[in-house]
Length: 318
Ligand SMILES: Nc1ncnc2c1ncn2[C@@H]1O[C@H](COP(=O)(O)OP(=O)(O)OP(=O)(O)O)[C@@H](O)[C@H]1O
Image (cartoon, rainbow, N blue to C red; front, side, top):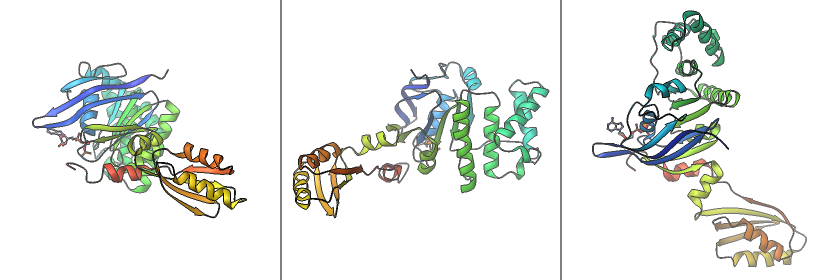
């Protein structure tokens, strides 16, 4: 059975006159890359702050690596690497110097700190820039340095809050590839918050859609589209044998008679069907009942694009 590294139950955070997180339930398993996707103001950062023990929940319970961050914030910080939206470094000192300093703060002696810092710089691809001042780093390099810092204490979980904000497309690609590699190679559990659906789609095993403090759906892409669009219009294409036109006509009549089917159009040996719900099995049965050979049946997979359009556009207060 898979181990739950993050376990959130009925989590609520209220500020005066405002509920930022509203009854959140979420479990994230060991080694998973989970994307918390939502518009500005959805409550992502507030949730992360509660996971890190930096702000207390108003209600509910949460465990990170089995630890309650509200009661044991120091313990949680030992196990969890946190990369905030903006990381502060000493700008006039090199990346290596900054990391050595941060490693020392984490309790390593000077020798250990130096070797850890070099190892982490190598891991995030900054060896060549090790002696360059951080003030001269690009935003992408700074985030990689931030990631190196979060990895120094060998965390079990890393939490990244909008890690790609302000990075150019090439830097984003490199950072996402790095996150994926770290998770796969080191069995790291990753929680990544973002409002960039394409980025989340590229790296996450599962996605949670967070809107106005509530998780409205979670799962992989297929289960998300089932949860959100079960009743909405789907497109199915049936590729059938063209040998017997009368059988094709018969199949079209039978499929058209199904309650959930709206339209059927024939394009030679392909039937384009619009329907609600998951009608593919019934459509396949009708084709078989018309004694027609079915070569292929495909249902258009709804992408996060459609999900985003429907739920997230507009952001806060929408
Ligand atoms: N300290 C605070 N006091 C009052 N309201 C707050 C506080 N922190 C956050 N909020 C409000 O709670 C809501 C959720 O904010 P939060 O920062 O968690 O959202 P987010 O999803 O991380 O968005 P963003 O991507 O913009 O950071 C917002 O409406 C915000 O204005």
